Image (cartoon, rainbow, N blue to C red; front, side):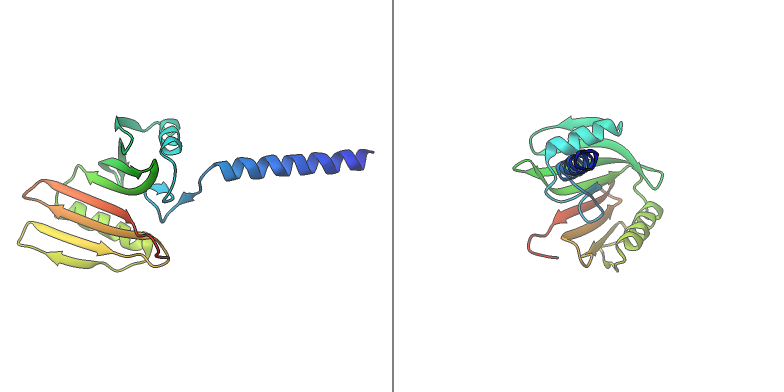
Length: 160
């Protein structure tokens, strides 16, 4: 009888563990800021609240938070279609070439990818990345004249 009880207990615990695991979307390097493409807006909102991020604004299409990356202050914007994550933006406080190159090196090392650089004059640079094995298209911009330093993540459907 004890063996039968232990077998049922093991099955019940296994089932509960799998159910809990499947209810939580995976943390994914190849989505945006730790969340896989397609993650539900409510999950991200709840998780960011638990992680003590400061909410700046919320709507049915965007969530904005304050955060830090590489010791740089930034705004994180999660963008949603039909309440699922489809793109995101990091907007950095630091708008200079040193900050741009630190972030660009971080992206290259994180995704093991080379960047395609485009320069326009002395105050605008763009690095574009298509990390292999992901559904991400990443565009890193610095526009000194417009006082903007951003990294845009886009979901590429149909890509692997």
